Length: 264
Image (cartoon, rainbow, N blue to C red; front, side):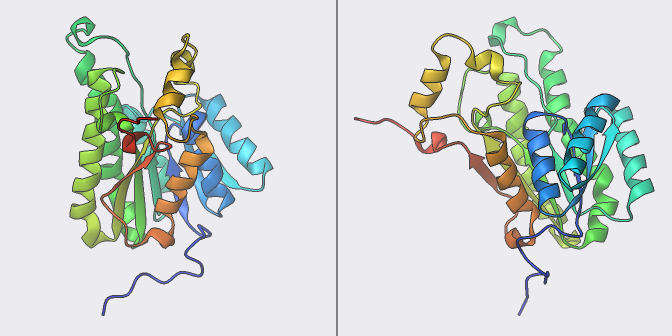
């Protein structure tokens, strides 16, 4: 009978090596903090050297082990730099969290000719390419986990931009496909799909008159989420505790996707 991989504790990341992109703020920083708090040694990727250094320094002050690396994970040159750093620092990679993402919010008829392709490349193609390039180190782990940061926009129309939604739907398809293709290599792949989370990226949207009330009314838990709540879901999918879970989309949405119409 097949057995799950053994570990000192299925609820720990001690001895694991993790790479997190977009790690200087918001969800990415919360993920890095959570992984390090659970014992992982983490490589934090941010576009600016100062942001990467500050994120790593903050984690070190809390007793965690983190390295800040300046690289743009949405570009080929940035991915080259990341892979060079992984090659220099580690012989294997246990956890890869792809958190890079952006949006251009406007009606479909107002997008330019290249907007769709650029958003798809930034949000989905970059994650696929980084995962593909990191495969040699992930396969050496024998029990690696890739977690992609998606969105509930891949499941339901939010009016937040069709190209953005399409890019997040592509990420969900990438998670399913890689999960099946790379299972033989000991690599699990899953996606976390947040609803509105209290981050700098959504602050301009939630500051619109009445918007926060509308979001709360549509959310069974009656509030927006905290980055730490997304980070805990990511950490679970990175742990040996989730060793039989792969190819899934895990909503972190306060019940948003479950909420249809209420008579109350």
